[in-house]
Length: 323
Ligand code: AMP
Ligand code: MN
Ligand code: MN
Image (cartoon, rainbow, N blue to C red; front, top):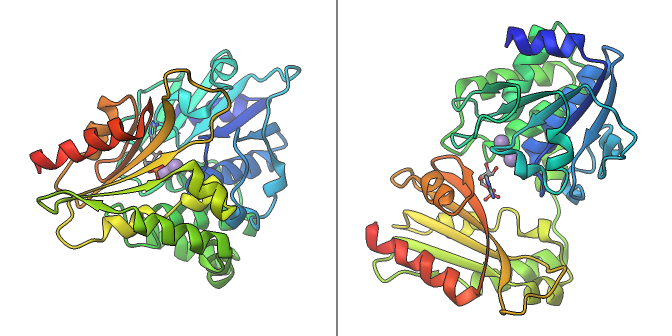
């Protein structure tokens, strides 16, 4: 921590970045660290490769997040947030790897320990919790914009204080953030408030896709590109759907297979899938995801795979035999 604070204090031109297809923690910790460094008058670029999901566009200074790294930028320091490995940054991973000082701040058990210095705390409920610790230790004043970012990161990564990563610190920080100007109702209204009609229709199709293993211990949901197109939704509308399969009685392992939009056509009929895994705590899904080249936490993990839908479904259903 002390080394990282020194590096941040000595930095002049900083890139702050988080993972593609960002969740509330990736966006919240990115804004919190970015705005905190702004208050030290550092030259900063806040970066995320993907579009910002609609539910997070209310966050103060969200327009500060850029989606491409211009060649002209000559950064001396990069702060990478909520990424278990540097490839999670997306196509820019290679460019970012060339920045002299790379600070890896994360809470995933599968973190590959990339970068020149690291602050990895797998007991932290969110990367926003770790970001809060750094900001406090640097003596930076937490204004209402920084507070709202930290609060949103903690709220969303703990599933509104329901998931197994919910710890005492989650509550103490959030209480403090409310004292710094966060309006919990306003945050909840944006993050959980309204759904487009398309999203509800997508939910309908997704629920219809649910398959359960013979022993009832594994559940699986599939969202295809056809469903996304038919309902006029965005990939971000798939976020949270896995909770419906995770909650089914007796289920120990839940999977969501999400077919991604393809930019180029595969001649072999393969498609790109994003697979999300959740467990009731009795199965280590981080280990399963790692075996497919992904990562995450023991009870929530994911991976990307290029294959056919039948093949990935068969492989996932196969896990039920070990449950
Ligand atoms: P998700 O299912 O996308 O909500 O992701 C669950 C957890 O696994 C999150 O903490 C992600 O950061 C992590 N995760 C998802 N996909 C990957 C991947 N391809 N590589 C590493 N970690 C991942
Ligand atoms: Mn994340
Ligand atoms: Mn996180």
